[in-house]
Amino acid sequence: MDKLIKKYIPMTETAFYILFSLTVPRHGYGIIKEVAQLTNGRIKLGSGTIYGTLSKMQTDGMIEIFADEERKTIYERTEVGNQILVREMKRIEELYSNIARFKGREL
Amino acid sequence: MRKIRWMWSYKIGETEKWLDEQAKAGYRLQHVNTWTRAFTFEQTEPSDMQYHIDYKNPKQEIRLAEAGWETVQKKGKWTIRKMQQPKMYPSRQDLFKRLQRHTILLSTLLGLVFTYISIMTIFSMLLFSSPTESGISLATQVVMIALFIAPAFFSIYLMKYYKRQEMKLLNIEQHHQAPTFKKFRLGWSYDVFGTKKWLEKMADEGYEAVKVSIFSFHFKEKSTEHIDYEFLYMKKADAHYYQFNQEMGWQHLFSTNSARWNTSIWSKPRQEGEEKDELMDVHERKKMMKRQVGFMTVFPLMLVFMNGFVFLINYPIIFDEQAEFSLLSIILCLNLAVAIAMIFVVLKMWKNYWGAMKDLNAQMVY
Image (cartoon, rainbow over all chains, first blue to last red; front, side, top):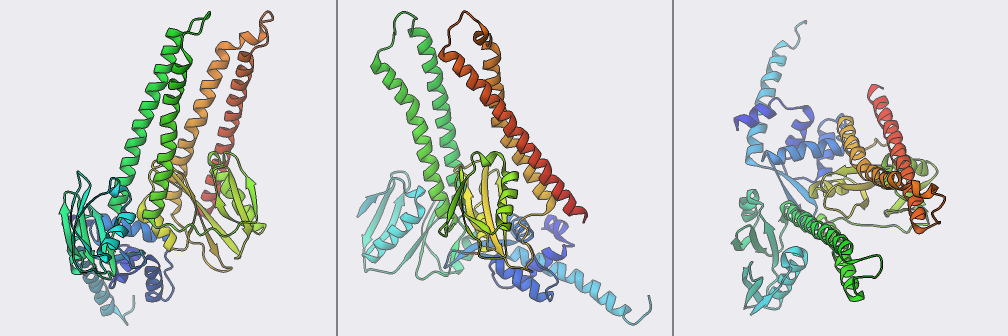
Protein backbone atom coordinates (compact mmCIF):
# COMPACT_ATOMS: atom_id res chain seq x y z
CA MET A 1 0.00 0.00 0.00
CA ASP A 2 2.82 2.41 0.87
CA LYS A 3 4.35 1.70 -2.50
CA LEU A 4 1.10 2.54 -4.23
CA ILE A 5 0.71 5.74 -2.24
CA LYS A 6 4.18 6.77 -3.30
CA LYS A 7 3.42 5.92 -6.91
CA TYR A 8 -0.01 7.50 -7.19
CA ILE A 9 -0.06 10.45 -4.83
CA PRO A 10 -0.07 13.14 -6.05
CA MET A 11 -1.95 11.98 -9.12
CA THR A 12 -2.03 13.57 -12.53
CA GLU A 13 -5.28 15.32 -13.24
CA THR A 14 -6.33 12.81 -15.89
CA ALA A 15 -5.50 9.84 -13.64
CA PHE A 16 -7.51 11.43 -10.84
CA TYR A 17 -10.55 12.01 -13.02
CA ILE A 18 -10.38 8.54 -14.52
CA LEU A 19 -10.32 6.92 -11.08
CA PHE A 20 -12.87 9.40 -9.73
CA SER A 21 -15.31 8.72 -12.57
CA LEU A 22 -15.50 5.05 -11.56
CA THR A 23 -17.91 5.67 -8.67
CA VAL A 24 -20.04 3.28 -10.69
CA PRO A 25 -18.62 0.66 -13.04
CA ARG A 26 -18.29 2.14 -16.53
CA HIS A 27 -17.32 1.32 -20.08
CA GLY A 28 -14.27 3.04 -21.53
CA TYR A 29 -16.47 5.35 -23.52
CA GLY A 30 -18.51 6.12 -20.41
CA ILE A 31 -15.34 7.30 -18.69
CA ILE A 32 -14.64 9.82 -21.47
CA LYS A 33 -18.18 11.19 -21.29
CA GLU A 34 -18.21 11.39 -17.50
CA VAL A 35 -14.86 13.17 -17.32
CA ALA A 36 -15.90 15.62 -20.03
CA GLN A 37 -19.09 16.35 -18.09
CA LEU A 38 -17.29 16.76 -14.77
CA THR A 39 -14.90 19.30 -16.29
CA ASN A 40 -17.43 21.05 -18.54
CA GLY A 41 -15.70 19.70 -21.61
CA ARG A 42 -12.27 20.94 -20.61
CA ILE A 43 -10.71 17.46 -20.52
CA LYS A 44 -11.26 15.35 -23.61
CA LEU A 45 -9.52 12.06 -22.98
CA GLY A 46 -7.98 10.21 -25.90
CA SER A 47 -8.19 6.42 -26.06
CA GLY A 48 -4.45 6.10 -25.53
CA THR A 49 -4.48 8.10 -22.30
CA ILE A 50 -7.36 6.15 -20.79
CA TYR A 51 -6.02 2.79 -21.80
CA GLY A 52 -2.54 3.52 -20.46
CA THR A 53 -3.87 4.73 -17.14
CA LEU A 54 -6.41 1.94 -16.73
CA SER A 55 -3.98 -0.85 -17.50
CA LYS A 56 -1.45 0.56 -15.06
CA MET A 57 -4.14 0.75 -12.38
CA GLN A 58 -5.27 -2.77 -13.17
CA THR A 59 -1.77 -4.15 -12.69
CA ASP A 60 -1.66 -2.40 -9.32
CA GLY A 61 -5.03 -3.84 -8.33
CA MET A 62 -6.82 -0.50 -8.14
CA ILE A 63 -9.39 -1.41 -10.73
CA GLU A 64 -10.80 -4.67 -12.05
CA ILE A 65 -11.97 -5.50 -15.54
CA PHE A 66 -15.17 -7.41 -16.22
CA ALA A 67 -17.47 -7.90 -19.17
CA ASP A 68 -21.16 -7.03 -19.32
CA GLU A 69 -24.06 -8.94 -20.93
CA GLU A 70 -22.97 -7.83 -24.37
CA ARG A 71 -19.44 -8.85 -23.52
CA LYS A 72 -18.29 -5.27 -23.46
CA THR A 73 -15.53 -4.36 -21.06
CA ILE A 74 -16.48 -2.67 -17.79
CA TYR A 75 -14.03 -1.07 -15.40
CA GLU A 76 -14.67 -1.22 -11.68
CA ARG A 77 -12.80 0.37 -8.81
CA THR A 78 -11.52 -2.03 -6.15
CA GLU A 79 -11.13 -1.47 -2.41
CA VAL A 80 -7.47 -0.58 -2.97
CA GLY A 81 -8.53 1.91 -5.60
CA ASN A 82 -11.03 3.45 -3.19
CA GLN A 83 -8.36 3.89 -0.52
CA ILE A 84 -5.95 5.59 -2.89
CA LEU A 85 -8.69 7.86 -4.16
CA VAL A 86 -9.72 8.86 -0.63
CA ARG A 87 -6.12 9.71 0.17
CA GLU A 88 -5.78 11.84 -2.91
CA MET A 89 -9.07 13.60 -2.24
CA LYS A 90 -7.89 14.46 1.27
CA ARG A 91 -4.73 15.95 -0.18
CA ILE A 92 -6.72 18.04 -2.63
CA GLU A 93 -9.12 19.08 0.14
CA GLU A 94 -6.20 20.43 2.11
CA LEU A 95 -5.00 22.24 -0.98
CA TYR A 96 -8.44 23.68 -1.51
CA SER A 97 -8.92 24.82 2.09
CA ASN A 98 -5.58 26.60 1.99
CA ILE A 99 -6.59 28.37 -1.19
CA ALA A 100 -9.97 29.25 0.32
CA ARG A 101 -8.30 30.88 3.32
CA PHE A 102 -6.45 33.19 0.97
CA LYS A 103 -9.51 34.14 -1.00
CA GLY A 104 -10.04 37.85 -1.17
CA ARG A 105 -6.55 38.69 -0.05
CA GLU A 106 -4.18 40.27 -2.44
CA LEU A 107 -1.34 38.18 -3.73
CA MET B 1 -23.65 -39.55 -18.05
CA ARG B 2 -20.09 -38.98 -19.12
CA LYS B 3 -18.90 -37.23 -22.24
CA ILE B 4 -15.42 -36.61 -23.49
CA ARG B 5 -14.44 -33.34 -25.12
CA TRP B 6 -10.86 -33.46 -26.25
CA MET B 7 -10.14 -29.87 -27.12
CA TRP B 8 -12.57 -28.29 -24.67
CA SER B 9 -10.05 -25.79 -23.32
CA TYR B 10 -9.20 -24.44 -26.76
CA LYS B 11 -12.84 -23.87 -27.67
CA ILE B 12 -14.05 -22.24 -24.50
CA GLY B 13 -16.99 -20.43 -26.09
CA GLU B 14 -18.27 -23.60 -27.73
CA THR B 15 -17.76 -25.63 -24.57
CA GLU B 16 -19.73 -23.13 -22.49
CA LYS B 17 -22.57 -23.12 -24.98
CA TRP B 18 -22.57 -26.89 -24.96
CA LEU B 19 -22.83 -26.94 -21.16
CA ASP B 20 -25.76 -24.50 -21.34
CA GLU B 21 -27.52 -26.79 -23.78
CA GLN B 22 -26.89 -29.81 -21.58
CA ALA B 23 -28.45 -27.96 -18.64
CA LYS B 24 -31.45 -27.05 -20.77
CA ALA B 25 -31.84 -30.72 -21.67
CA GLY B 26 -31.78 -31.63 -17.98
CA TYR B 27 -28.16 -32.65 -17.57
CA ARG B 28 -26.41 -30.76 -14.82
CA LEU B 29 -22.63 -30.69 -14.85
CA GLN B 30 -21.17 -32.43 -11.83
CA HIS B 31 -17.51 -32.33 -12.50
CA VAL B 32 -14.81 -32.22 -15.14
CA ASN B 33 -11.69 -34.29 -15.12
CA THR B 34 -9.16 -31.99 -16.74
CA TRP B 35 -6.78 -34.89 -17.45
CA THR B 36 -9.13 -37.36 -19.10
CA ARG B 37 -11.26 -34.50 -20.46
CA ALA B 38 -14.38 -36.29 -19.20
CA PHE B 39 -17.44 -34.21 -18.30
CA THR B 40 -19.76 -35.94 -15.84
CA PHE B 41 -23.44 -34.96 -15.73
CA GLU B 42 -26.38 -35.93 -13.57
CA GLN B 43 -29.94 -35.92 -14.76
CA THR B 44 -32.16 -33.27 -13.13
CA GLU B 45 -34.85 -30.78 -14.02
CA PRO B 46 -34.04 -28.74 -17.12
CA SER B 47 -32.70 -25.33 -16.14
CA ASP B 48 -31.74 -22.09 -17.83
CA MET B 49 -28.17 -21.92 -16.58
CA GLN B 50 -25.27 -20.09 -18.07
CA TYR B 51 -21.91 -21.67 -17.56
CA HIS B 52 -18.63 -19.85 -17.53
CA ILE B 53 -15.17 -21.35 -17.64
CA ASP B 54 -12.50 -19.23 -16.06
CA TYR B 55 -8.76 -19.62 -16.21
CA LYS B 56 -6.55 -18.33 -13.38
CA ASN B 57 -7.95 -14.84 -12.76
CA PRO B 58 -7.55 -15.10 -8.96
CA LYS B 59 -8.34 -11.49 -8.07
CA GLN B 60 -11.91 -11.56 -9.28
CA GLU B 61 -13.11 -14.47 -7.17
CA ILE B 62 -14.87 -12.53 -4.40
CA ARG B 63 -16.43 -10.00 -6.72
CA LEU B 64 -17.82 -12.77 -8.91
CA ALA B 65 -19.37 -14.57 -5.94
CA GLU B 66 -20.98 -11.28 -4.93
CA ALA B 67 -22.43 -10.93 -8.40
CA GLY B 68 -24.14 -14.30 -8.01
CA TRP B 69 -21.85 -16.74 -9.75
CA GLU B 70 -21.93 -20.17 -8.14
CA THR B 71 -18.77 -22.25 -8.36
CA VAL B 72 -19.35 -25.71 -9.81
CA GLN B 73 -15.75 -26.80 -9.69
CA LYS B 74 -12.40 -25.29 -8.92
CA LYS B 75 -9.46 -27.44 -9.82
CA GLY B 76 -5.97 -26.18 -10.48
CA LYS B 77 -6.15 -23.13 -12.66
CA TRP B 78 -9.65 -23.82 -13.94
CA THR B 79 -12.84 -22.61 -12.33
CA ILE B 80 -16.25 -23.45 -13.70
CA ARG B 81 -19.10 -21.24 -12.55
CA LYS B 82 -22.77 -21.10 -13.29
CA MET B 83 -25.51 -18.54 -12.89
CA GLN B 84 -28.94 -17.69 -14.19
CA GLN B 85 -29.09 -14.50 -16.23
CA PRO B 86 -25.67 -13.12 -15.38
CA LYS B 87 -25.10 -9.38 -15.65
CA MET B 88 -21.33 -9.51 -15.55
CA TYR B 89 -18.67 -11.91 -16.66
CA PRO B 90 -15.04 -12.42 -15.62
CA SER B 91 -12.27 -11.05 -17.80
CA ARG B 92 -10.89 -13.35 -20.46
CA GLN B 93 -7.39 -11.96 -20.34
CA ASP B 94 -5.64 -14.88 -18.67
CA LEU B 95 -7.38 -17.36 -20.92
CA PHE B 96 -6.27 -15.38 -23.92
CA LYS B 97 -2.71 -15.32 -22.68
CA ARG B 98 -2.82 -19.09 -22.28
CA LEU B 99 -3.96 -19.54 -25.87
CA GLN B 100 -1.14 -17.30 -27.02
CA ARG B 101 1.43 -19.14 -24.95
CA HIS B 102 0.41 -22.52 -26.26
CA THR B 103 0.38 -21.34 -29.85
CA ILE B 104 3.85 -19.88 -29.54
CA LEU B 105 5.13 -23.07 -27.92
CA LEU B 106 3.61 -25.31 -30.56
CA SER B 107 4.78 -23.19 -33.48
CA THR B 108 8.31 -23.07 -32.07
CA LEU B 109 8.23 -26.83 -31.76
CA LEU B 110 7.01 -27.17 -35.34
CA GLY B 111 9.77 -24.83 -36.47
CA LEU B 112 12.36 -27.04 -34.79
CA VAL B 113 10.89 -30.19 -36.35
CA PHE B 114 10.90 -28.47 -39.71
CA THR B 115 14.54 -27.43 -39.40
CA TYR B 116 15.53 -30.89 -38.23
CA ILE B 117 13.84 -32.57 -41.20
CA SER B 118 15.38 -30.06 -43.62
CA ILE B 119 18.86 -30.77 -42.33
CA MET B 120 18.30 -34.51 -42.44
CA THR B 121 17.02 -34.29 -46.01
CA ILE B 122 20.05 -32.36 -47.18
CA PHE B 123 22.41 -34.74 -45.43
CA SER B 124 20.78 -37.86 -46.82
CA MET B 125 20.87 -36.35 -50.30
CA LEU B 126 24.58 -35.69 -49.94
CA LEU B 127 25.16 -39.19 -48.63
CA PHE B 128 23.06 -41.21 -51.02
CA SER B 129 23.09 -39.40 -54.29
CA SER B 130 26.00 -39.89 -56.59
CA PRO B 131 26.44 -38.18 -59.96
CA THR B 132 26.01 -41.41 -61.93
CA GLU B 133 22.85 -42.88 -60.44
CA SER B 134 20.13 -41.58 -58.25
CA GLY B 135 20.65 -43.42 -55.03
CA ILE B 136 17.27 -42.74 -53.48
CA SER B 137 14.17 -44.55 -54.56
CA LEU B 138 11.11 -42.64 -55.62
CA ALA B 139 9.18 -43.81 -52.55
CA THR B 140 11.83 -42.44 -50.21
CA GLN B 141 11.78 -39.15 -52.04
CA VAL B 142 8.02 -38.91 -51.70
CA VAL B 143 8.19 -39.68 -47.98
CA MET B 144 10.89 -37.08 -47.53
CA ILE B 145 8.92 -34.40 -49.33
CA ALA B 146 5.83 -35.29 -47.29
CA LEU B 147 7.80 -35.03 -44.07
CA PHE B 148 9.00 -31.70 -45.29
CA ILE B 149 5.61 -30.32 -46.21
CA ALA B 150 3.47 -31.73 -43.38
CA PRO B 151 4.81 -29.48 -40.61
CA ALA B 152 4.50 -26.48 -42.90
CA PHE B 153 0.83 -27.21 -43.58
CA PHE B 154 0.17 -27.94 -39.96
CA SER B 155 1.73 -24.59 -39.05
CA ILE B 156 -0.54 -22.77 -41.48
CA TYR B 157 -3.55 -24.60 -40.08
CA LEU B 158 -2.45 -23.72 -36.56
CA MET B 159 -2.07 -20.04 -37.41
CA LYS B 160 -5.53 -19.93 -38.94
CA TYR B 161 -7.03 -21.76 -35.99
CA TYR B 162 -5.33 -19.42 -33.58
CA LYS B 163 -6.59 -16.39 -35.46
CA ARG B 164 -10.18 -17.65 -35.37
CA GLN B 165 -10.03 -18.36 -31.64
CA GLU B 166 -8.32 -15.06 -31.00
CA MET B 167 -11.02 -13.11 -32.80
CA LYS B 168 -13.68 -15.00 -30.84
CA LEU B 169 -12.02 -14.43 -27.50
CA LEU B 170 -11.36 -10.79 -28.28
CA ASN B 171 -14.95 -10.40 -29.38
CA ILE B 172 -13.73 -8.63 -32.50
CA GLU B 173 -16.45 -7.84 -34.93
CA GLN B 174 -15.38 -7.87 -38.53
CA HIS B 175 -18.10 -5.64 -39.83
CA HIS B 176 -17.03 -5.59 -43.41
CA GLN B 177 -18.93 -3.16 -45.52
CA ALA B 178 -19.16 -4.15 -49.15
CA PRO B 179 -16.09 -2.81 -50.96
CA THR B 180 -16.43 -1.30 -54.42
CA PHE B 181 -12.89 -1.78 -55.65
CA LYS B 182 -9.63 -3.39 -54.71
CA LYS B 183 -6.04 -2.27 -55.00
CA PHE B 184 -3.06 -4.56 -54.83
CA ARG B 185 -0.19 -3.51 -52.65
CA LEU B 186 2.28 -6.32 -52.50
CA GLY B 187 4.52 -6.44 -49.48
CA TRP B 188 2.83 -3.49 -47.78
CA SER B 189 3.83 -4.87 -44.40
CA TYR B 190 7.40 -3.94 -45.30
CA ASP B 191 6.30 -0.37 -45.82
CA VAL B 192 3.72 0.35 -43.14
CA PHE B 193 4.64 4.02 -42.86
CA GLY B 194 4.28 4.61 -46.59
CA THR B 195 1.09 2.56 -46.61
CA LYS B 196 -0.46 4.64 -43.85
CA LYS B 197 0.28 7.81 -45.80
CA TRP B 198 -1.16 6.23 -48.91
CA LEU B 199 -4.37 5.30 -47.04
CA GLU B 200 -4.68 8.88 -45.81
CA LYS B 201 -4.24 10.14 -49.36
CA MET B 202 -6.93 7.72 -50.54
CA ALA B 203 -9.21 9.08 -47.81
CA ASP B 204 -8.58 12.64 -49.04
CA GLU B 205 -9.59 11.48 -52.48
CA GLY B 206 -12.80 10.10 -50.99
CA TYR B 207 -12.17 6.42 -50.40
CA GLU B 208 -11.97 4.45 -47.20
CA ALA B 209 -10.46 1.00 -46.71
CA VAL B 210 -12.96 -1.55 -45.46
CA LYS B 211 -10.98 -4.75 -45.79
CA VAL B 212 -7.29 -5.53 -45.82
CA SER B 213 -5.37 -8.67 -46.69
CA ILE B 214 -1.63 -9.31 -46.84
CA PHE B 215 -1.45 -8.16 -50.44
CA SER B 216 -4.47 -5.98 -51.11
CA PHE B 217 -6.73 -3.21 -49.84
CA HIS B 218 -10.46 -3.06 -50.52
CA PHE B 219 -12.04 0.38 -50.70
CA LYS B 220 -15.43 2.02 -50.83
CA GLU B 221 -16.60 5.64 -51.05
CA LYS B 222 -16.10 7.18 -47.63
CA SER B 223 -19.15 7.93 -45.50
CA THR B 224 -17.70 10.60 -43.21
CA GLU B 225 -15.56 13.68 -43.66
CA HIS B 226 -12.37 12.13 -42.28
CA ILE B 227 -11.04 8.65 -41.76
CA ASP B 228 -8.20 8.13 -39.30
CA TYR B 229 -5.95 5.11 -39.56
CA GLU B 230 -3.73 3.46 -37.00
CA PHE B 231 -1.11 0.82 -37.65
CA LEU B 232 -0.43 -0.81 -34.31
CA TYR B 233 2.55 -2.94 -33.71
CA MET B 234 2.92 -5.00 -30.56
CA LYS B 235 4.95 -7.93 -29.38
CA LYS B 236 1.73 -9.72 -28.61
CA ALA B 237 -1.89 -8.97 -29.27
CA ASP B 238 -3.39 -7.78 -26.00
CA ALA B 239 -6.95 -8.89 -25.34
CA HIS B 240 -8.03 -5.82 -23.44
CA TYR B 241 -6.39 -3.42 -25.83
CA TYR B 242 -8.13 -4.88 -28.85
CA GLN B 243 -11.46 -4.78 -27.08
CA PHE B 244 -10.89 -1.30 -25.78
CA ASN B 245 -10.02 0.09 -29.20
CA GLN B 246 -13.11 -1.46 -30.67
CA GLU B 247 -15.35 -0.05 -27.98
CA MET B 248 -13.82 3.38 -28.60
CA GLY B 249 -15.14 3.24 -32.12
CA TRP B 250 -12.04 1.94 -33.90
CA GLN B 251 -12.77 -0.64 -36.53
CA HIS B 252 -10.49 -3.59 -36.83
CA LEU B 253 -9.38 -3.98 -40.42
CA PHE B 254 -6.50 -6.38 -40.22
CA SER B 255 -4.14 -8.20 -37.94
CA THR B 256 -1.35 -10.62 -38.62
CA ASN B 257 -1.92 -14.34 -38.17
CA SER B 258 0.77 -14.66 -35.66
CA ALA B 259 0.78 -14.89 -31.89
CA ARG B 260 4.02 -12.96 -31.85
CA TRP B 261 4.87 -9.60 -33.40
CA ASN B 262 1.38 -8.51 -33.99
CA THR B 263 0.63 -5.83 -36.57
CA SER B 264 -2.93 -4.57 -36.77
CA ILE B 265 -4.72 -1.89 -38.76
CA TRP B 266 -7.59 0.13 -37.36
CA SER B 267 -9.75 2.87 -38.81
CA LYS B 268 -12.09 5.40 -37.26
CA PRO B 269 -14.50 7.69 -39.04
CA ARG B 270 -14.47 11.28 -37.84
CA GLN B 271 -16.85 14.15 -38.52
CA GLU B 272 -15.71 17.63 -39.47
CA GLY B 273 -14.73 19.60 -36.37
CA GLU B 274 -14.35 16.50 -34.23
CA GLU B 275 -11.03 15.99 -32.50
CA LYS B 276 -8.76 13.20 -33.63
CA ASP B 277 -8.70 10.31 -31.17
CA GLU B 278 -5.06 9.55 -30.38
CA LEU B 279 -4.37 5.93 -29.55
CA MET B 280 -1.02 6.84 -28.04
CA ASP B 281 1.12 9.85 -27.31
CA VAL B 282 4.03 10.95 -29.46
CA HIS B 283 6.70 9.29 -27.33
CA GLU B 284 4.94 5.96 -27.30
CA ARG B 285 4.33 6.22 -31.01
CA LYS B 286 8.01 6.86 -31.70
CA LYS B 287 9.01 3.88 -29.59
CA MET B 288 6.54 1.68 -31.40
CA MET B 289 7.71 2.81 -34.83
CA LYS B 290 11.32 2.20 -33.91
CA ARG B 291 10.57 -1.36 -32.81
CA GLN B 292 8.60 -1.97 -35.94
CA VAL B 293 11.13 -0.68 -38.43
CA GLY B 294 13.84 -2.66 -36.67
CA PHE B 295 11.91 -5.88 -36.73
CA MET B 296 10.74 -5.51 -40.31
CA THR B 297 14.28 -4.90 -41.53
CA VAL B 298 15.59 -8.23 -40.26
CA PHE B 299 13.96 -10.51 -42.82
CA PRO B 300 14.68 -8.53 -46.03
CA LEU B 301 18.24 -7.92 -44.89
CA MET B 302 18.69 -11.62 -44.32
CA LEU B 303 17.52 -12.23 -47.88
CA VAL B 304 20.00 -9.63 -49.14
CA PHE B 305 22.90 -11.35 -47.40
CA MET B 306 21.90 -14.89 -48.30
CA ASN B 307 21.25 -14.20 -51.97
CA GLY B 308 24.16 -11.83 -52.26
CA PHE B 309 26.47 -14.40 -50.73
CA VAL B 310 25.34 -17.19 -53.04
CA PHE B 311 25.77 -14.86 -56.01
CA LEU B 312 29.19 -13.65 -55.00
CA ILE B 313 30.72 -17.07 -54.53
CA ASN B 314 29.24 -18.46 -57.74
CA TYR B 315 29.15 -15.62 -60.22
CA PRO B 316 32.34 -16.59 -62.08
CA ILE B 317 30.28 -19.43 -63.56
CA ILE B 318 28.20 -16.98 -65.57
CA PHE B 319 31.22 -15.33 -67.09
CA ASP B 320 32.97 -18.56 -67.80
CA GLU B 321 32.82 -18.74 -71.59
CA GLN B 322 33.32 -22.47 -71.73
CA ALA B 323 30.37 -23.19 -69.48
CA GLU B 324 27.03 -23.67 -71.11
CA PHE B 325 24.01 -21.67 -70.22
CA SER B 326 22.48 -23.68 -67.39
CA LEU B 327 19.82 -23.66 -64.75
CA LEU B 328 22.43 -22.56 -62.29
CA SER B 329 23.08 -19.30 -64.11
CA ILE B 330 19.34 -18.52 -64.11
CA ILE B 331 19.22 -19.18 -60.38
CA LEU B 332 22.21 -16.94 -59.86
CA CYS B 333 20.55 -14.12 -61.76
CA LEU B 334 17.48 -14.59 -59.58
CA ASN B 335 19.68 -14.45 -56.48
CA LEU B 336 21.06 -11.13 -57.62
CA ALA B 337 17.62 -9.77 -58.48
CA VAL B 338 16.20 -10.73 -55.07
CA ALA B 339 19.17 -9.19 -53.27
CA ILE B 340 18.81 -5.89 -55.16
CA ALA B 341 15.01 -5.83 -54.74
CA MET B 342 15.35 -6.37 -51.01
CA ILE B 343 17.86 -3.55 -50.73
CA PHE B 344 15.25 -1.28 -52.31
CA VAL B 345 12.56 -2.59 -49.95
CA VAL B 346 14.70 -1.75 -46.94
CA LEU B 347 15.69 1.66 -48.28
CA LYS B 348 12.10 2.59 -49.04
CA MET B 349 10.93 1.47 -45.62
CA TRP B 350 13.59 3.53 -43.86
CA LYS B 351 12.93 6.56 -46.03
CA ASN B 352 9.25 6.47 -45.12
CA TYR B 353 10.12 5.78 -41.51
CA TRP B 354 12.26 8.92 -41.35
CA GLY B 355 9.50 10.85 -43.08
CA ALA B 356 6.95 9.72 -40.49
CA MET B 357 9.36 10.55 -37.66
CA LYS B 358 9.87 14.03 -39.08
CA ASP B 359 6.11 14.58 -39.24
CA LEU B 360 5.84 13.54 -35.60
CA ASN B 361 8.61 15.89 -34.52
CA ALA B 362 6.94 18.73 -36.37
CA GLN B 363 3.73 17.93 -34.48
CA MET B 364 5.54 18.10 -31.17
CA VAL B 365 6.96 21.57 -31.72
CA TYR B 366 3.84 23.28 -33.05
